[in-house]
Amino acid sequence: MAISTHMQELYGLPVHDFPTGEPAGGLPDAASVAWRVSVDAYESDEAWEEAFARFTKAVDPGEVTALVVGAWSDVYDSAPDEVVKALVASSRQFPRLRALFLGDITFDECEISWIHQGLVTPLLDAFPDLHEFGVRGGQDLRFPAVRHERLRSLTIETGGLDAEVVRGVAASDFPALERLDLWLGTSWYGGTAEPADLAPILAGARLPRLRYLALRNSQIQDEIATALAGAPVVAGLETLDLSMGALGDDGVEALLAGQPLTHLKKLDLHHHFVGEALRERLRATLGAAGVEIDLSDVQEEEDREDRYTAVAE
Image 1 (cartoon, rainbow, N blue to C red):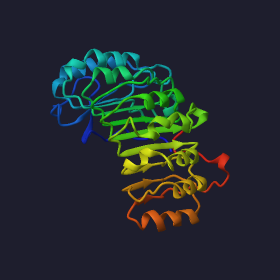
Image 2: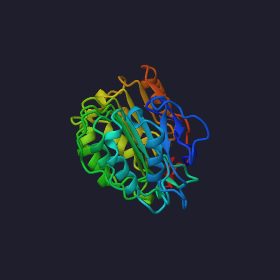
Image 3: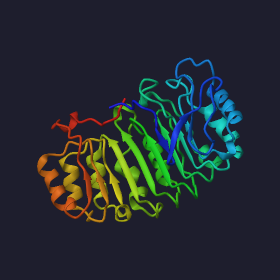
Image 4: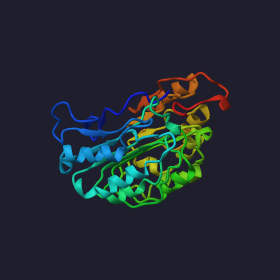
């Protein structure tokens, strides 16, 4: 699977593309949509920061609550350093910004594992009132430990997430965080994290309000499931998402043998390699207890070494 469509919604608002060139007609009310600012991914005639400057003149930035950064020029070999600088420099113009996503880029613009990133935590420092922050692309991504008092949702989508990034997230202090979504990916595309790197997340102490945990799209999904089977963080969750990865019978066996999961509202395992017998056990135990279980998108490869994640290149 590749990411073939742009985001349709952010912060409960429909995404609206800020037009390239002069707007042909009227623009929506600044607070009524999530604004997507982008340029051509290949040899654009306009730099992203130039498009952003046009945006801040055409739309009242003081009313904007959600912003989506689409492609910047040459995303396949250029990090968004100038994008980050432009956003940080203009942060005081956006007092109501509550959601920011960096890298809403589809496969026909740039494959997810070709997207160059860089140091993204200055955005969290610059926007202390953000509730939602997301980033797509793991190549050269840097996320040192940070503290953010108001962040409720953090998403990092990659085909391969470096262990250093995982350790940075795990060491961060997010007292208000309710949703954490990490696409760990595969070693073929830079995914080097091991369950030990997730230890502070699994312990739960740094994330007292966490209710949704997704550790997904992972080549080592069985090992992650095994680590979660006894992890303290699980007791406070409403949703546990281990989807899109190489989960098989070993991981499900560990989950069923571990701590009770009947308190969950949802267990998302879609895109998996779990056999029918264990799927039935999940339905007979957790499903019968009222847990919504997503076991869709069953994959047939039995050899563990040949299993694949839903999103890689």
